Length: 257
Image 1 (tube, one colour):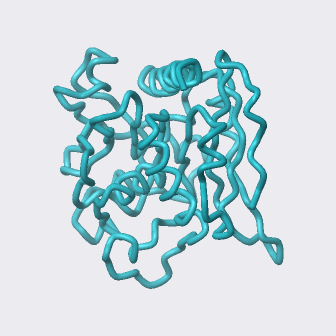
Image 2: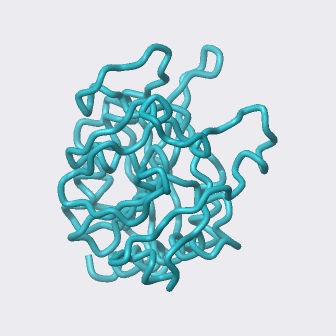
C-alpha cells in the first residue's frame, strides 16, 4: 500500500488527492494523471495536489481520507467496467479495474465524511455508478448525438473545443453560480449516464437528453461533470467557477474537519 502524506498541512492550502489511471507503456506498469488536472488544481483551486495510485492492493482507503481535504476524480482513456453496473461488456472496451477498485471506495468514503469531490468525465461516470446508477456502455449505439464524440485525428486544441450547449437545471448550483440557463461545454466520451444513482440530482443535460452534470444532494460540494473544465479552468466562466468553488469547499473542510 502506498503511504499517505503527512497530516500537517495548512487549511489555507489544503491537500487534494487525484486518482490515477493505471496502464502499461511497453513493459512498464504506470500510474498517471494528466498535467491539466494538476495545473487547474494548483493555479485555480489554489490547493496542493497529490496523486493516489490505482492498485487493488489498497483495501482500506481511510488513511487517505484522514489526511485529504478534497478529491478529484479525473477523466481517463479507460471506461468504468460495465460489470459494476450490471451491463454486458462490449468488445474491445478499455477498462481499468485497479482504478475502479480505488475510485469506488474513495467516492463513497469521501461523501460519507462530507469531503468535497469534483468528478470529471470518467470520474463523473464513477460517481453515478458508486451510488447505484447505471451507464450506457456506448452512447452512440443508444441513439445519442455525435457531438459527444472525440476525433483522435484532430489536433488537441480542436479536439477539446467547447462545441455543444447544455441546459442548466433550474434548481441547480451551476445555474445559481452563472445566473444563466445554458452553457457551452466540451464533452468527449463513449459511456454516459443511463439511470441516476441514489441521492444524486441532475445539474445539466444535453439537448439529446443525456445527463451532463450531477451533484450529491446532501453534500456541501460533490459535483460531477461529463465535460473537461480542466482544459480552460483559467478563462472559461463555468470551468473557472467549478475549480474556484471546489478550492473554497476544500478550505472550508480543512478548517472544520
